Image (tube, rainbow, N blue to C red; front, side):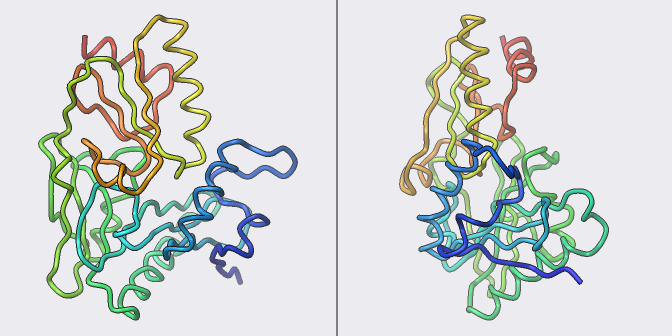
Length: 249
């Protein structure tokens, strides 16, 4: 029978973090993620995973310490719940969500929240799955992003007032943090593609909790603007940048 394990300051270096597993060479995204986690774990951040090699985990933290532009009292925020093959359809997703809900109830939290969208995004946890547990939409943006919450006492969180989904800059502008291990590679791809195609761009590294709480867009770990308008929370590659430039020009 498979069991679960939680990352701690003591086991962080030796344990894998599910998304990218390397047995020999060190991956720069993993190193950035673990450095980010080493600070977050001190503030109640939870990375709870199946004790197997593969992608089956949930990651959440007290909202007050979550690097997202969401405000609320006494909430937990789910960054990611991800179950990939060969662990799908075995009840692990349910167990991971129930672990988070149990902690919220046992420790007296007002509820749990997470980022969603009217149209499911590739880099967001499945909101239909969350709604099956009782999560409801409690806030929305003008372009279809949603804040989902599972309230235990009637209190609800909201997007920060800074979330307008607009900026003054017209060039491709990307906000990113080190929370996701895929970001390091994606940022390098974006730089290379934009430089080689003479596309103006602006990369903004989110390096503090205060900065994250006051971002102009919805955000888990990545947010892209073009022509002053918010485009997506999905991590970009060469094809998606090309499509954005063509569609928005």
